Length: 130
Image (cartoon, rainbow, N blue to C red; front, side, top):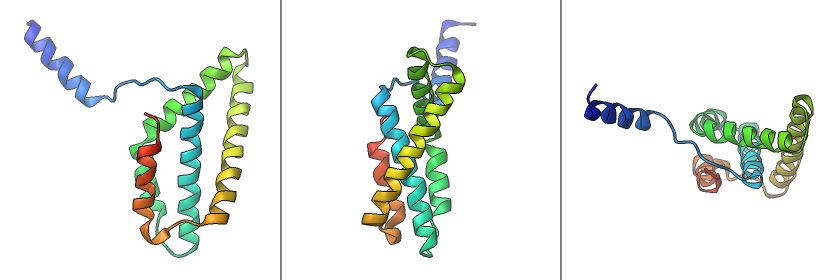
């Protein structure tokens, strides 16, 4: 193949796939907290009669790559500290449970602007570390 053809193919592939990004451990943990807040806020609004679960699902799908990379980063950190796979998973589950507790307490205290849930959720777009 000609060099121009290869360059064109490379350009198309680069548009198709999201670029890899590097997260710090703290950024990854913070991202997972935002995902917990988003999920629990959808539940909160649904319980109050505001359809929000589908909005959350669409948002989560859009940012699934951030969530996956954040989980990977947490697991890599555990591996670098000498944890075996089962222990890494346990630490991740405990961290998510802790995030869920923090988010639940905060939502219970402050509530969520359910009538503007989509805009509220869009605010997390800017907070996610990508």
